[in-house]
Length: 271
Ligand SMILES: [Zn+2]
Image (tube, rainbow, N blue to C red; front, side, top):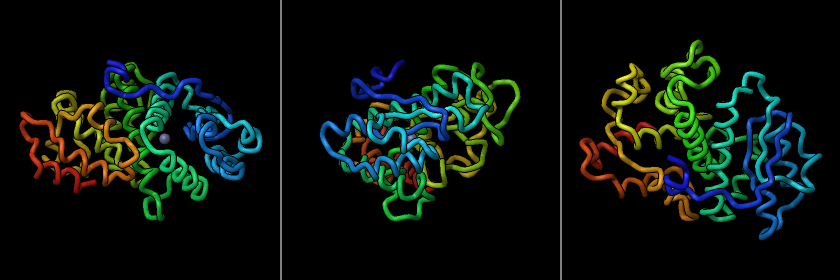
């Protein structure tokens, strides 16, 4: 199943993608696409690249790309599935950009430029980036797992289990339990919530993969949400994880054991 079968819009056409050897995995500010409709100040563009790539800003900010993918940040990220996961993540952002409002994007660019990244979830205005990255991280891992499955992937970084590729250290496992490190990416990004509302636990339990231990027993009994249902809500009226979770609560898939509003709230309240 591919992204269009999931109901995900393709990214805008003629994307300018820069692969560079500076730090950082990737970013999708969409500057070149944006400039056709909205001027953005040079200082904002340079500030964004300085914050996300440690030095590329001065070279690219006059003709900024839409997406950057950096490969010098960590030598153990050269494996094909690692690069693909970054690409899937950034393309998910580019697709989101087509659905949402320009202002949400620019607000997040300013946030990242001023905080040097996603922040820790306490700074004013973090919610837009938290929403944007919730989708990006979920989609990157979801599609990497579809492409590479339970045992064709590379080693993920410690403290994720290393050694021979297997279900316990797969991209699916990262979305499922993050090796019990955290429920969140970067302390506040609830990408795993989107995974939890899609999947029941049969697949992971049949492969001896436990639920994240922060999700206490039976607190994830929701399943059956499609990617198309989720991404349909990424228009400009959805500006935070809270709004997205509120909207998803109203479209609980029917006919599935465990899918009750009460159970949805139990899961949601863990995040
Ligand atoms: Zn991202």
